Length: 397
Image 1 (cartoon, rainbow, N blue to C red):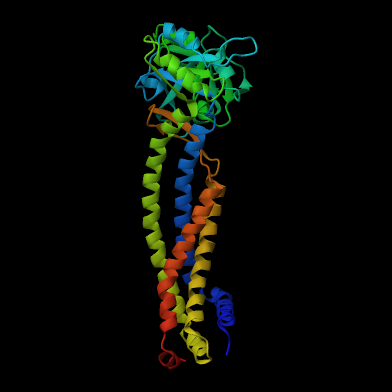
Image 2 (tube, rainbow, N blue to C red; image 1 turned 90 degrees about the horizontal axis):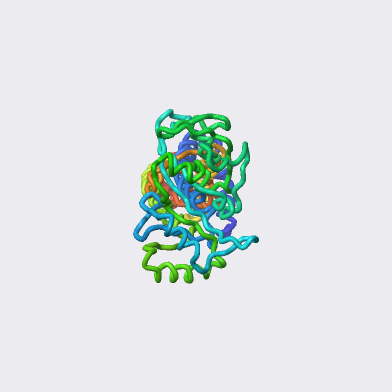
């Protein structure tokens, strides 16, 4: 009499060796699981890539100051006198020359055409001065040069340059009633700024008749703890109806609506497809049990127990599902990881360029989903195999 473990090993190995004889039915289950895992990882990689873009350059030592109640830079407004008062507040770091590191920035939306679809899209155009480059220490020009103050010149983020038309260095693009010359392309560690165009703030104010106003002020803090000091100083000044928050917290809040929207679509679709894959796995394993009726009956007659027979069927279903999951994950990784797209940021109503991010966590989720499909899809056929009447099955030999 074989012991239980030996029986499990023998029957399981026998089943796996005979998979090639059931290639047609097995491939259906594999394909179904591959599709489910592929859709799940693909959709979630969109949310992951969007979040990574929004948060990659957020810093805990940079504070963003906007008008009280403003949920985005578009809905904020700060006058020049208020900018000067903010720059004099305690808690702001100084550079090697003793100058406060603060950047007053203008934010407008312009229309450009997408290269892929030739459709109009809202693109952020940010007005800045040299302090903006001091605040964003990771930013660097990768093609061309910076814009010169006082001239109708702009630089394009790497993402915007790749997604939108007429942003090559040397091109002249008309935004509103003003023509601008593209003089450079910059990168910022894959962050949100790479979806933007930058120009001299004073020139942009004149072009869009913004007077001497700005949308936000970014300041470098002496330390993350200095935010409380800055908040207290702003709150105690009746001329400043402003709110200060860490840049990383602001960007996280901006990223949340789109990420939740993508997940709200992705998970239900993946669940529905999972149900189809489970039924496919059930049919495949029932067919497997039916084709092995003689084999199962013979093994039971030789003294093999019901549990080893059931386990081997369940294990076969799990193996098929994991193969499908691995194929789906590999295809999505090769096809989409790093693939650049743009979508609308609901908070600012402007385009954000980001790359799909097929992370290790998403691959693990895909494998877990495949395993669940395999176990659920193989459970009932395994029970049937275990309960198969030996005498009835032997009559079919």
